[in-house]
Figure 1 (cartoon, rainbow, N blue to C red):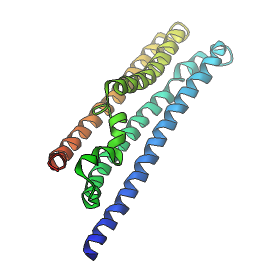
Figure 2 (cartoon, one colour; figure 1 turned 180 degrees about the vertical axis):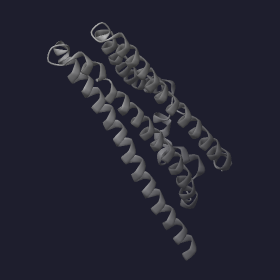
Figure 3 (cartoon, rainbow, N blue to C red; figure 1 turned 135 degrees about the vertical axis):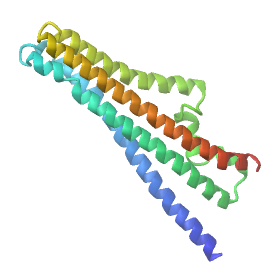
Figure 4 (cartoon, rainbow, N blue to C red; figure 1 turned 90 degrees about the horizontal axis):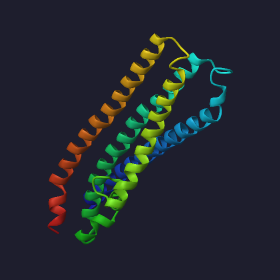
Length: 204
């Protein structure tokens, strides 16, 4: 009996740590998104100063912080999602010890939230909402970068323009590859979760 209690206590402590880490990482990712949007908003309000109070070479570099934020946000968001898989595994173990009916599993803990936030599990309406949110961020960062390149194209040297366009294209490739690689890792983790837990859960 004591061994079972110790087992559950250990799982509970591990679960709490994972949930705390996942929440903190996700909040950081959302804060970064807000900072990026605010950064673009502030720059657009002073766009009339481009070439006057703000020199064109400096203007050409203004999108760089946005791409750094985008790259770091991809790491943070994917990290939070990875913690989410870990939380689901621990939740399953805790749920098994709880004695609750198996059909309630999808309504308990992170499983209920995943039906809304996880695009691979959510309903069509929530899939569309998720796509709109992330597409909006992509359009803001990409659109602002394109805007800056167009504004500065004839204001700086041809070499500087080409180097900037090439650099921002490479940053785009890096961010996209980060998401693709991260999603691939998450898909493998989810497959292992489904393989080891979901069939058992469905049998109850």
